[in-house]
Image (cartoon, rainbow, N blue to C red; front, side, top):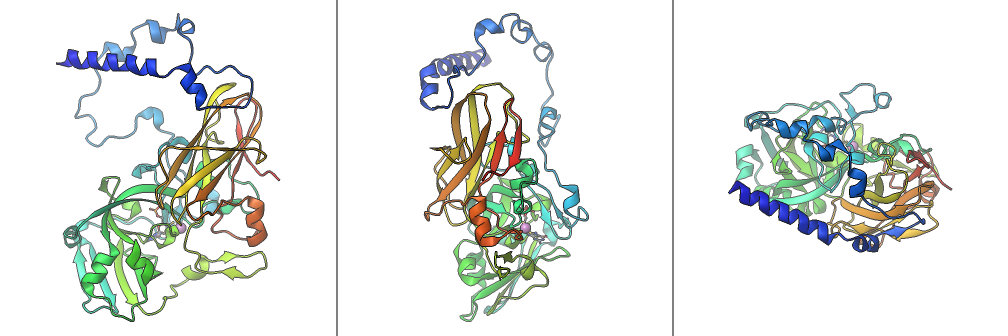
Length: 434
Ligand SMILES: Nc1nc2c(c(=O)[nH]1)N[C@H]1C(S)=C(S)[C@@H](COP(=O)(O)O)O[C@H]1N2
Ligand SMILES: [Mo]
């Protein structure tokens, strides 16, 4: 039986090899130089390579038993693919943020273990048995739900990105942080399992004056936020699973609010209470904190939706090019709080010429989209940028266009086009081009 399986695997491998011809590879590539296109080392060059000619240690002994890691962790070789924080950014690590290592990930789903965390008073440990969700205010029947109660409602699955409004916020005045993880890593994208908020609001019975909800968490900060009732009844979601398993403590275990397309600060973690109100509740310092400064010195309030944005994740400062020239996969992420990404353009020369990137899958609404541009790199300097388009026709602005409207003193909602300077030799730096 095992023999048959091995045979099947081998023949399958040979079939795959035959299908990937040189011609097929060339067709999907953009040639930017005269360099010969060789994706791999030739068999001849492999001669004398002990990794090919000699039996390796891992084939001489047996591996770990199935009881070695009841809950699997990434292999040691990947130990640098972790969340990181920026020490000088916040006074301590309690009211702080760390960043998703987007430069080292592919596809679109963020593994929970490396999805950024943003807490105002730390990540709390709330046992499922002690979980309570209260619905009160302008409802016919104030209700309290346990975790088990929530599990009895019809469930749905949805993939959404969550981006902190402060993502890329350090880059307004100039290129500052040298890595996509730090410039764009306050984002994650997960598949959530849970129930629409609408389901439990209907259970409580909405009064006709109810035009807002005020939501808060069980942590010390409580992170109270007001959300218009239209959004609450549209796609706001009460999630208790992410990527198939329980939420992690740091993302709001056992239950968090998911507010698709809207800034991360409304995605209340450790969700404890939903109050239906007839006006927004100006919660503590927060409402004023999350306003945007404009170029004329005034500010705009309630900019909830995250505009279309994209970034090249590789190559990038933490993911330099390791070969001198030839085939190169340029890859990145695009997203829009207004809907689906319909197109992403990539430039190699700081915006003079644009190529349409290949979307790994058709864009999904309010979720990350992976894009690729396969090029034949001539080994020379490049100024890489990506530009996202969404289903509303909106096109991601340049840094200059955004600054003309918002000035240099903004912090939140920086969705400008990012530039990476790829140098001869493959090193990459965060720069601005004009
Ligand atoms: N209860 C509670 N909810 C919260 C916060 C918090 O500090 N407490 N931080 C908010 C902010 S500012 C963001 S950006 C997101 C971050 O979600 P994450 O930690 O899952 O990345 O959670 C939001 N929800
Ligand atoms: Mo945030």
